[in-house]
Length: 485
Ligand SMILES: Cc1cc2nc3c(=O)[nH]c(=O)nc-3n(C[C@H](O)[C@H](O)[C@H](O)COP(=O)(O)OP(=O)(O)OC[C@H]3O[C@@H](n4cnc5c(N)ncnc54)[C@H](O)[C@@H]3O)c2cc1C
Image (cartoon, rainbow, N blue to C red; front, side):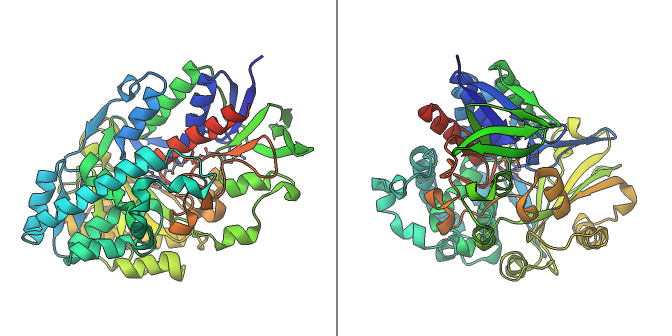
């Protein structure tokens, strides 16, 4: 008889693990608390508008290709991808930078801002590409069980890059504040400040400029739907509206999970729900990490999000638009050093209807607005509205015309929603940051040290936050279970 696994949650990591386990012959059931799959990557559909509620940047297409190739499939079997040109536009107080879909276009833009800087950029990206090859091909697919996993001939000669920071690395070559901000932007996906992120992570710059920004037609949720379809084709059973309330342990083994008042049993339990929350489902003696442990960790930011339906097209905006027209350092301090609502936050806006007509009714624009904030802040309707107004004032300035009267509706999502919708620790959006002391074997483990057949996956464990790492995390957790079986 085939061995069985029950998986908690249906985010990218859980769906990935489910596919690998089903493919290896396991009988797989997914239990998801919400009414639809996808976790932080769920979709909001309203009045003909479509919004990705969480991730909107499709980076590292090679990792998605590798995932589907493991099942002899292609991403195009499940969704249609377009490379965006421009990839994105950054609005500064007195200028903009547009990142095109090739190094040639990006070099021209760098030279416009700082004549001669394209030569330095090419060198910087060549180094970033070498790091990408090492990180993605040699390190990131390792399960974080031992420090030795990080030691390869290639990393040994780059050890200084683990102890220097992206902030220093970028400033070594570039002096122009706008170019510095542009090159520091990608590591924000890792959830920490550039001054806290190892220089080795410059591979994110290669992901950005070298591999480009892509858009799945219909939005990122199409990737979730594709993975769900693949999982079901492989025989996975998915149960929504099924919150797991308890993991019952007997003699050091996870015996059952409690769902909708019933006890469900399986040979293995794998949780893709937030790690901290999963441990609270266990009796305290079976938890590996104390509240003090979690409290000391550097969490990636939470976010204040708005999903806005406009009854007009917004000229001058791009599919991905970043508003870096205020002081980054002050905003970063308010997230990481002295957590509070930032005075003048940077923000990000996505208008997927700019390149994909399916995202909004004709003549309309779908807008997602995102302000990164510290986790665990006070979250009230008044604060959300005050920040929306502040953001709109700046947005309208860049747009060159008022637009508030063109808003058909807006929905918000913030810390309280991350907690209630996803059982997120302190309302974090992107999990735990990838700083040096929270890398690989120093992250909460994929395998429980206290409960024999309990495993974890997702953005709080190995390798880290983001959609591509979540796909990898699912694969790594599945491999450990297959090995143990
Ligand atoms: C606003 C936002 C923007 C982002 N932007 C990007 C981006 O542009 N590009 C990118 O690559 N990444 C981005 N990310 C990060 C990326 O979305 C995440 O890293 C990834 O989706 C995490 O997947 P996961 O499977 O680890 O967790 P989740 O998606 O959180 O999945 C966990 C699942 O477990 C469920 N669950 C929790 N508790 C229980 C329980 N007790 N019982 C049953 N089910 C339970 C939850 O409902 C959820 O469905 C963004 C994230 C956010 C929030």
